Image (tube, rainbow, N blue to C red; front, side, top):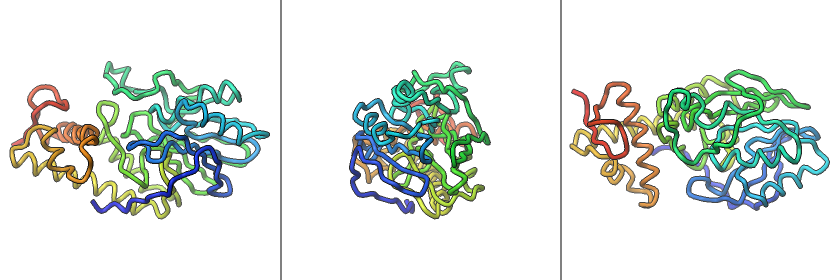
Length: 299
C-alpha cells in the first residue's frame, strides 16, 4: 500500500556489528513473523555504554551481549517498551552489571490505573529503576539521549534520540520491514497516529528500529505509514457500506496478500481502527466493542 519497505539480508546471530561511530548492534535469535530476523539490541558509546532493548530472556543472546562488552561498563539500560521480545533481558543484565533501567513505566502504564485490561504478551515483571517521559535527557560518557514518548503500539512506548548523530531508536513504532501491530486496549490507533505526526516535527536523520535495518530519509517513510493507516480506514468504510459488519469478514476482504495465520493479528489492527472510529463518532457498535462485535457506519 505504497510503503517502501526495507528488507534485510539474514543476520549473523551473536555477533556485534558496528553501524555508526557511536552505535553497535547484536541480534537475538528469536525470528518470527512479528520480530523479523529477531530483536536488535543496540549498544551506544564506547567504554561506558548504554544498552537499548536488551531483548528477550534468551540465554545465548544475553551471554553474547555481555561477552561483546568485556572490558566495557554498562551504565544505562534503556527500554522502548515492555513486550516480551524487548525488556525481559534487562533483569539478568542488571544482575551482572548493576546497570539501572530507564523506561516510561511498567506494562500498561496509565491503563491499569483506570482499571483497564491489558493484552497478553507483556513483560509484567518489568518496572524501570528510573521512569522517564517526553523530553527527559539521559547523559552518558560521550553520548546524550533524549526521550520521545510515542504511545500507540503500546501505551509505554518510547523512542530514544541520540543527539550526537541525529539518530532515533524507534523500537516498534516505525520499522522498515513491516507496519506495527496496534492491538487494543493497550494499543491505541489515535495515539499511534499522533505519535507518527510527532516524528514529522523532528529533524532526526536516521531511524534504528529494534527489528530490521535502519531507515534513512525517514520523514517520507513516516508519511507513508500515515497514508497507509488512512487507506485502511477507507477500506473499513467500504466494508461497512457493503454491509460487512464483522471484523473476521473485513479481514478476509482487506488482507488478501497475507497468509491466513496472520489474520488474527490483522483483526487486532482492524479493531484498533474501529475503536478509533467509534471514539470519533464515525461508526456504531452493537454492544461493547470487541473482536466479535458487529459494527455499522453512523448516519
